[in-house]
Length: 356
Image (cartoon, rainbow, N blue to C red; front, side):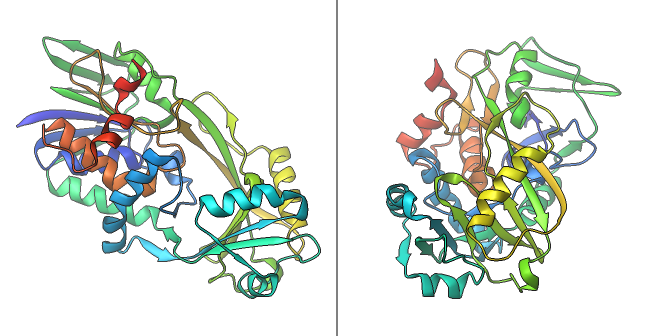
């Protein structure tokens, strides 16, 4: 049985550990004290099959059955709102996401605080789902542990080197060796590559912030849709009895423990406020996470083109949870030399060798 080291304890790393530990001894190494500390623990994840570029959508389709069959999804629906002057953008986005345009009476029945003085166009699609991120991560974690995987948390790596065909990874108080190394380090994936002597791919983390508040106007928001402003000016959604609003910013940052910017939140809340009737009174708390993209906005999955035994599972951007089942399956197929279940064109479009 081969040995594999997986670096990163977010959804990418944990799902990879579950997929790979069926056929190998896996050690997962996470720098933070617990799993899903960074982006994976700060995601307002939804499942929309027609989200992302064509390559991402192929992964979405291949992940859908696993997510449905394991109780990870709850139907939510999505609504797109636009002003009169945003008509052209609305038509494009409405079609791209497969939405149906609604009259404003119907839209307001689904989203009672819709401001008809500002909103001129509304689109809707019912088959969009909340995604239970913790349930998905814990399911993969339990599967990996049951298959003999070892999880090392609080293990901030100090050195990675390859000697006589084996990877050696060291952290204060511990070390591991393996035939193969999987880089699932999220925002830090290029940094991990550099430590291992592998050429970085140009992965860029971007901040996305979130404001959390009580349900507007005391409404029961349980069955309200995910509501999106056209041109990604903002979005809002229910979450555990609270109401989340994001300014949808995409600010490039270096890998770090991200926090929300007060001015960015204020600007996003102003855009949101224009489209609703209930005032924003108080934010109970806020947070931010990093969404890390490859230059072409598709995930990076597969063997490095130059360094043997080094595999990438990175660049999830905003699609990590909804693509995790198919991404982990593809990685397992590639590591074990099995014909991938994913179509060949998508496998090629995901390969790190596309950047060579």
